Length: 429
Ligand code: UGA
Image 1 (cartoon, helix red, strand yellow):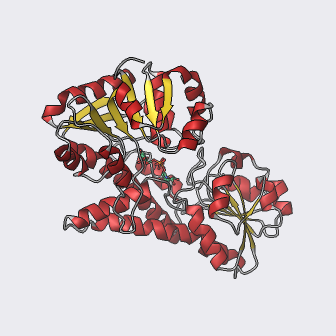
Image 2 (cartoon, helix red, strand yellow):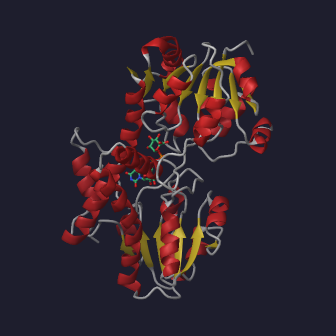
Image 3 (cartoon, helix red, strand yellow):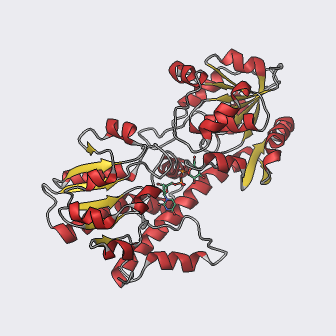
């Protein structure tokens, strides 16, 4: 590996590992650092610590180009572009916790030969502060737009690549753009603060779209319309677009919850009350709880009832349980006195730690046996193939609450079960 020709990646979490593996796939040498020695040791043995489609294959195929280290000196020796991919979880105040970013910055050299490329999601203004502290370190804001479950494909086919830098750091901005050039996607060159805001505003807007369609779904339930049809009709308007209009039991994950609150707090700290975003967050909190009303409509009191959850992860194709709607749902169900059984094809291990009082089952049919209701929480494809006719015979009450509008209501009803979706009162039997 040549002197400073490698790409440096700091923080080997979801973003860091996908970034490292994809840059390696493009033919770059990559040196990736994490403070977690056990994780680095596992990666060196060829083990991939997260479930992300296509990632393990990429890591294996590019083994020779990926070097995992625990010492910053090893990164600084080999790389001039240092991609910062550490996490920025929320603090108690809702602001982003920048302690990991700070820990990285403190180890960097101000020698005019390196650039910090910020991929971590940080409040607008962070780059300017770091730039002032270390004037000899170039700084580029290059936010990431990967979705868990499709992160490798998203990296390889970006809609856009945002590169924010001060005029004096053109060399670093050019180098980042050059790295991404083989992937296509429009490059947006801008200032640091605008790049930081593009990231925060994009996530806030996507979360707004979902909360909006969820409220439309709730109105559909009142007026007897089908939100799936409504979203289809809306989405064909090119000004609206079809994506992120799937109504359900709310958004979760490692990004939307923390990033919406962080933007709300960022605005508040600057003296502006971000009213719309405040409502978007509240709608999402309430949406997770609406399932309880659907259950009691059919079952009355939930005390002693067995409720089976299909899926627990915050979305399919991931084992990530961070801010998953299932966590709120389980707490509410148990608060109502229900017994909760659950099955998730990949998230069982992380879920067990967070939900010690849930009965974990090794298949959907075993979770559903004897259940008074099924709640589809995560739209894993295998749930579409369930034999609902057979399942209905084993349930105590044949009732499905489809929290993701994922199943075909006619099929489920034809199999002899009651079906409740989200905003689907207009669905004809
Ligand atoms: C999100 C953004 O989509 C990415 O662009 C961004 O890079 C990432 O956050 C981040 O900031 O790191 P992610 O959280 O991985 O990605 O997953 P999404 O596919 O956006 O889903 C988020 C939540 O919204 C999930 O709980 C999902 O079930 C829910 N959702 C999504 C809906 O309820 N309805 C929809 O129509 C779409």
